[in-house]
Image 1 (cartoon, each protein chain N blue to C red):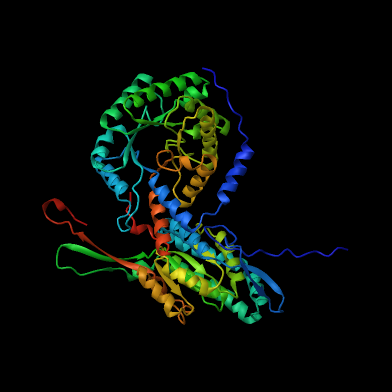
Image 2: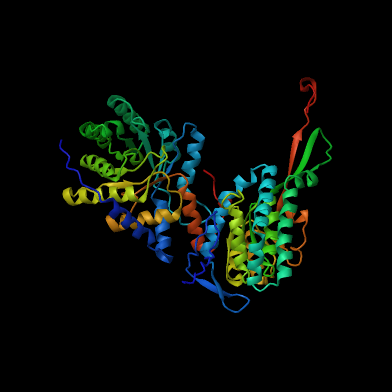
Length: 297
Length: 288
């Protein structure tokens, strides 16, 4: 397949990000935005040291972010390794919270297609509602774009056949430039996945506003050309409510209201939830909060 | 011949080891002893306080976990840096309307105060902690630990000495601080931030705001993440009451800040008591 790539105006991106960051969100809009952000979080734990109990704890938090305050939404999903999908599925039974599983040799993606498909099948078999796959960055950087595309298409096929949603992780921190980010986005979008996602959270450089802007723009262009709606998930490094609101402003401006729900936009984060909760309570009470009064996760 | 223009210093806030302007964009004016405009100072807002608390919280565990000896060295280094800028601080105080003799005494006392607390840093726990009597085969210790993030309403008079005398004992004990500097003598506190920056004090350990007490006091008292508040200026009852919502320790240092005392360190410490079994019996060997 041929890919026609879009140039990226880096200075233009930076300039637009700066303007979006300067936007002030106050009062009612802020309250609404904070609740929306909480409801969009994929509460994540992806450690070698994860235990079933830790995942159960996180699942409880996903369903009951902060029991002291009534009427809070739950988070969107729990994101775990395939081995822990079963645990999460049981713990979340009866709630709206989805179970997302990373797969395809996360985080490096250095494995054969066959094994990646096997892992995907395993995660789905355990009950995952969503699969977060990584692309083969090595192949991408070597210029083997068709390989990357075919791999995404193959994993997507497995997911679609079981009505499981697929997120495609580009690991933008390893791609080098915004131009490459756009290129990888376009390749992934061509397969029509459910989401494209910035990062694994396993390397130093994770989600940033400029990278997200480039990916959102790719989604917008894809939507204009094909009418297919694809979601977006920035992940890693988003730890405070203020930044989360900046992301929401960006989504609203680039893609519009249709994307402003957890069906089409997610935050991959572990620490963000508590800061959002602290800010929500600050809005309710007028008093700045202390992290000791919130669950540690 | 052209006349040279003086380059005026821009007095900003000191948060997290950097000098940001107030996010509010507001300022207040100070006149020098001749009644001329001396400086525009940042009129810090609730949000600046919030940012300062975030910085202080982030720095707290790192500062508390440094060895007492290292904290002592850093406090002594503050004294060294202040000594090397002694004349410029005296001049600045004179510009603020203090007479030369008083200014000199104030700077010298501030230097000595830093050395005083530097000396205490690795001694107060040894002196005040205790091994308590027990009726069983246990050790029982009571040891001092820092309270956490401490807010400071520095005295209005003696902008430098008041600042040093309130801040030094708190950081000696491993706390990090957010200080509201003297309103009329704020420049000298911000200049002291330059001393702090050159003394290996990690960013965020001392954060300095300049502005109005009435505006910021309710936020100092109600903020859940400020664990204690040292106030060396009178606070209204309303302000004090709002601290009861978060069980903050309120430490009244009005009239007592000017004395150097190890009890000022203990004021912002928490006593932790811990049990430890004394190993005895067949397998115990020599025990410990």
